[in-house]
Image 1 (cartoon, rainbow, N blue to C red):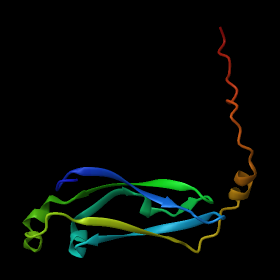
Image 2: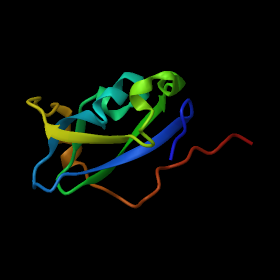
Image 3: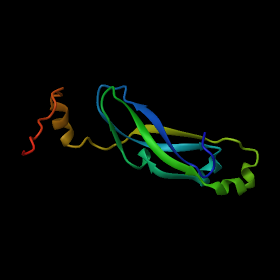
Length: 119
């Protein structure tokens, strides 16, 4: 629950159910649609494409606020809540060349070496 003028951080979960990496983008939808006039994204995962590995699940952040001027708009006199949803879909972008090298990297549980400080 977020009040008018309050900043909020929310997370949307996306899951790649395929056996290949995908690059996707998101678009948002608001109900009622007119509430989008007062929806202000400060920082959003939807500004950038997202690479999601096979069978990976990620939490994508959005930092936002609803403009308090919405309270002065008579179209919202009967509205006591609004709904924000996202549609995530695959884009036409190619995987970056570095992805193959990253995929071939071997994961280890060994801690990286530390440098001893001079005494």
